[in-house]
Length: 161
Image (cartoon, rainbow, N blue to C red; front, side):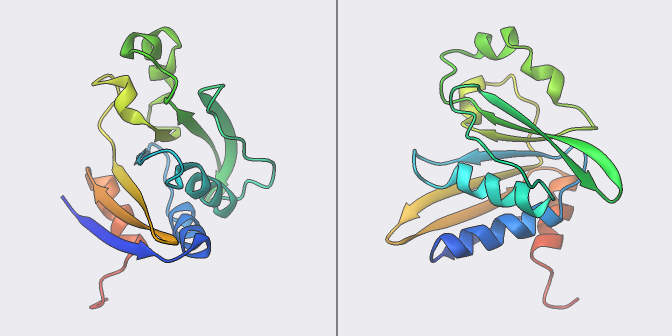
């Protein structure tokens, strides 16, 4: 497992990270966001969407649980599905909502509060852990698949390349 931990000193640093992630998105990518309320999960997702070319409003899916967006990556239209599972009270609700159907090779899924779905979510390609500290936040990125490792490598190129 590849991982990287950094301190993001302010919202601008978080936005820059989101922009970098937005530029390395690939169809089928599953990113799971962890962190307490107010840690910056939705803020990071907004920056990812903007960098991926979305120009409209980016709403928090706190009440709708899912906000779908369409972005164009390398000339191909891709659905980016932003989930917020905070209000899911049991993994069964995840199944009943039909959310498993969104996790395939063609969509990009960003999930806040993935633990609420129990073991029903497919394995993440990348997990991002955000912790508010002082004026900024600590971020830890963990690659959980080859696709995630490739994205993490593209996000933070090796100094030897």
